[in-house]
Length: 367
Image (tube, rainbow, N blue to C red; front, side):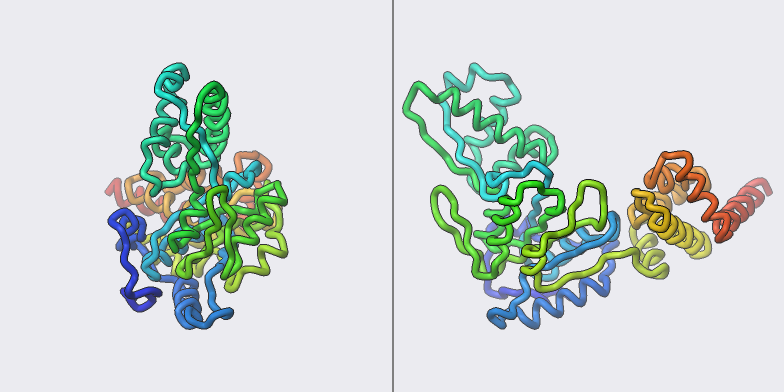
């Protein structure tokens, strides 16, 4: 697929931007969804109003949504960046924030963490968003960084009241992707509570849209692709609002892949190649996933659980014991729900197959 789906062949990148273009690991397996999106986007890229630049990946945790978004960065040769949404996001998290630049004397009066954060922001080259800088400097999550930025704005504002103040605007990750033409993954916009924030996102998703900043109006770069990734029917998530969904030109329903694909990906990820056992493990994951859905158990048996379970076994872990620590307890630790899952595995005889397989391994080890 190399170069086949590049969208702007004559585009030049800075060294930093080249580093943002995702490099596919050897373990990456091209999926049907990836091929379909690549073909659709490439086919319509120069078709004006029929251009496909907003894509929704909706499905279960561990179904490969973010992995697919990153793979599209490599396929389209676009720098990849992301923003992780949270319930209390406001408009400053969408467009960025204005921060007073306080004096060195005032800077020395505040605590070490806030001082380090402000210094990092003041010394930044404008290439990275404020949130990204704080995540890197303080080692905190994106949501914590957004809240910290609001704290810093108050501190800087209080510290600068008595003098001439210089203000500096720090664009959000969304603005950076929008202005420079990156592939932007917006994770979980369904958790956002403020309708005004969703309206700002709606406006930004227009193909010829613009964002009003305090310093300027920026227009959407023709190469900017937005990938929205969201889980289905999870606690804290709301249905994707109609206005946002209407601005999507292509959607993929992300579920557990077929058993053969699960096994192929597990081999690529872990290097473990016992096909007989991998088939049993995949059957168990599929059974647990269906059982959890049927019984309204909130957890998920997905590809991540499958990979870590296989990896544990590949490194000598107990097959049945690691089933609990890598899979079942990730779904639930409620005793009644665990009992429902165990009964389903017994009913489908997959747990029996697993125990027989492990028993045979132990017999061979004693011989």
